[in-house]
Image 1 (cartoon, rainbow, N blue to C red):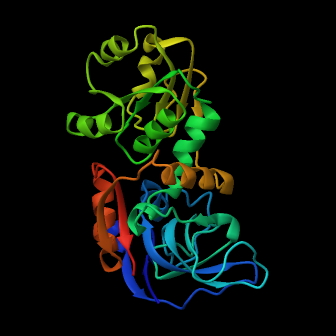
Image 2 (cartoon, one colour; image 1 turned 90 degrees about the vertical axis):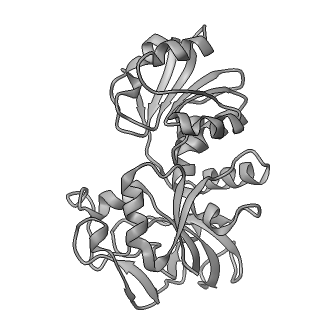
Length: 307
């Protein structure tokens, strides 16, 4: 099968598309024919060796964790899925070796759920990692409730654009920081947009005079520094961007949780959640896709169309 691999740590330039053996499969695994795979900033960090002290890598490494595809074979020890089922998944292993920038992957049933019927393959592939991050931040870390006001920094980004929709689906009023070109998009999601820069706290206060109840930072760059000025007395804060500007901030990392993935699928199929894809690349252009990802201003998910 074809796969994008790297034989040593580095940037997009170390990625090449080659023929590799098809994945072996345990009896308790599924073999998935990949239709699309999404890129994430973590791909670049792991590929650059940023976590080499924490995670073992066995070269050549196929990067990627997000997948959408069709079950081609179900091991004799599996339940819940059968050949022909359309699925999405967050397939992150304990080591770096077999990822989703490929034509096939072996996965555990707990890592996948059924594909939302109303998403195309690229959109579906873009849901798992950022969706889990956003859902776990909004629902578990911040416990956003009906009637509350929530501020999301980086509201048009990969995690942010899902977080604002999840918060709105829970009955919250949502304010989102974003650059001016993304304001109309946020309005289409029912979000009140505000621009970055000087006077941000005053602009947020104008929209939420009594203060916001919760703040989610998906952007970093000191975004949480204004939290005390724009929050209620008991404002809650969470970050997916390693920000520590506000005391008590809850740090959020995506954790595989099949129930949370299923909840995301239900939101999508209910018309409460959509995935924004900025651009698709064929597998042969995986390095170009990573270069666009590294620029950091794609305005949505970047995906590989594999088949």
